[in-house]
Image (cartoon, rainbow, N blue to C red; front, side):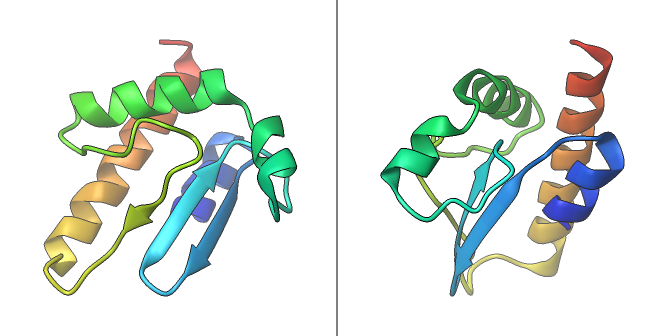
Length: 96
């Protein structure tokens, strides 16, 4: 869902995943090592992070850290997170 929303709002991102862990990079990818991760847009990630907080989703504050999806997360949690992602991308696109 994150990739689809990024595409819809015109953001170039790479989402790396392994099992229940994922990381969103504002970077065309691939992101395969630390040097690639350093190239990701940290300012854009910082704006995204702050907007996600405003919408009640608490992410790790660094572009280098992962999100974790666990068995404790419900379908409603996933939907709420994707809704927050969409609102964040919308506001970023508007230049807020």
